[in-house]
Image (cartoon, rainbow, N blue to C red; front, top):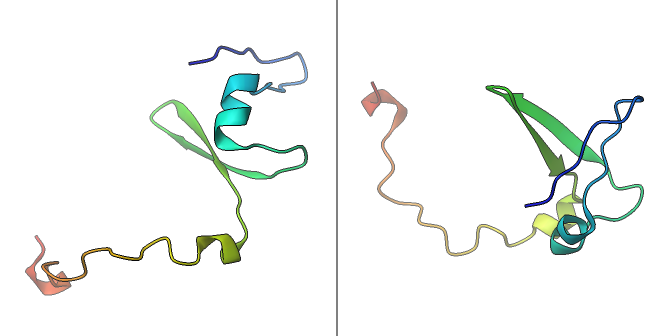
Length: 69
């Protein structure tokens, strides 16, 4: 886990080990999500890179909407 701090311009540097681990590149855009006081950065990826990411997912056994509480 890396540490960083907010600059006077509210900028944050992503530590090098984290950048390399998740392959962050200069100019890459992120979605910023907040929930319960936690900030999460989610990298925007082209839709073409998502091809096949659900291959092998289980599709049966899910409850129908009418069965939910």
